[in-house]
Image 1 (cartoon, rainbow, N blue to C red):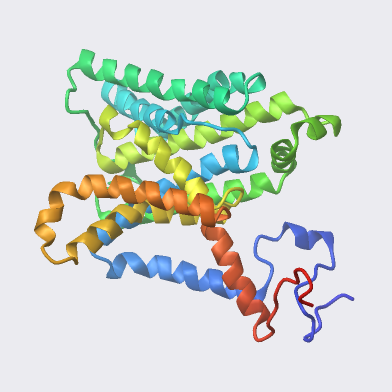
Image 2 (image 1 turned 90 degrees about the vertical axis):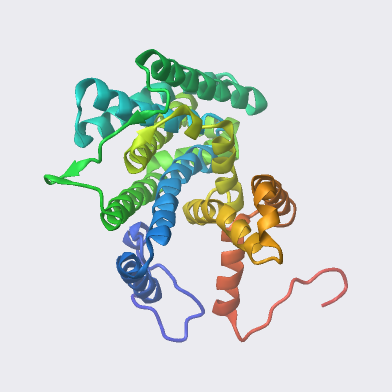
Length: 360
């Protein structure tokens, strides 16, 4: 059958070319169009604070997408994400301070440094697994932060490296609305790259390695090369996100890349939903906005002023509690909740339930 019948109970593919479409159905096309319009209109109706939150979400989305490629698809554990962000940020800062390098030079340089670190710290993944691999990647964080701190001290940048706004087309990117569209474009480009990667032979190899490494090797997949490639690609994208963060904030400092930042990115992958790019985006949005939701909730309580001194501790405690709740009660993450909602509306008004025991 060459076309979909109106009474069909779902969407069926009739050719191999349809497997390569990013947007398959009319509803998806309409939804994507409306979402794009909403993103385009948002900066003209949002306040400066809301624009800053949106830019933070875009930066977090780039980092979470890169970690999702490594952990969610290739199955490799990494606790050096904050170190890679710091490497990209310091690469941009040092090149700007020492050589006056422009924006279009520092970003590729940050990607190259990230790829090199991905090779160096991806090599242990060929021999180590699980906790041992996690500890070896954790060393990356401490090495990069130490080197960054030494550079700040030696050069006298005790408060951090100040970076001038980047120039695009001869215009300095200072306006928050321009930053919004720059970071939106960067996040969209990262998503497009990740979507095409996981649909390619490389993505299929990563998923096979994650599912069962021995079986993947028996099928002829080069385990070592694909593991190393996962670290290289993820590290390069993460370093670019760090460089963008440095330009957006206007300075680089080791204090911005604590170990808690790594935990936040791991939480984005877990809370969003392992093995899903949509989960990476949802997790980035949730984890970035969560502290502000807690702050707003405390501000709404009677006698809000007395809670100001414990806001930091409450944020930490609430963040840990949310991670535990997701791990125990919703291991599929936010994307699992979204799929259940989607399935409900697709099947409505037909009720369905799982048949168990003698209840038939």
